[in-house]
Image (cartoon, rainbow, N blue to C red; front, top):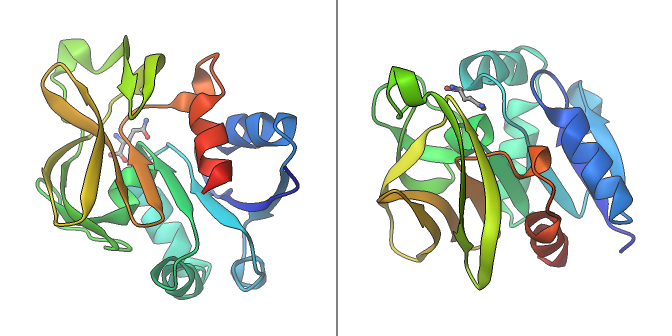
Length: 187
Ligand code: GLN
């Protein structure tokens, strides 16, 4: 598709996103330092990992402000798992806040201990039977106005879209299905 996608590459599962996006024809730019975040992209990926570590590194590496600005200006962004937490306006059980561009509230590590990690299958917007891998995942407790709920699994909201921000609790890059990445590239 010839898109140029910036992939936050400071921590977490970024390589898996890159492989998937490249296979779908996109070019990936790894974002590791301030200058990288000043480049222009067609989209941005915030991978899974540890949101607290990613948030700290984003600030230390001076990527936080330029990326926040680009998201606010409407650059399409896909946040998976920790990436969802980075985007959320409110985090129910954490004092930290990060980009705060996505209304409204998530809960970190929302699934109890014995279900910290699990696989499920669910629908995502018009897509059915999407495989989903949850790893110490958050879920979305409350959505703001203008937010489309794309996926509910076991009674919890696990994927939403707000304007050009696509965010989900699970890891599509670790599942053998391209449809979510294709959907993002079309955004
Ligand atoms: N538990 C992590 C956090 O709070 C998210 C886990 C993940 O990205 N797989 O940031």
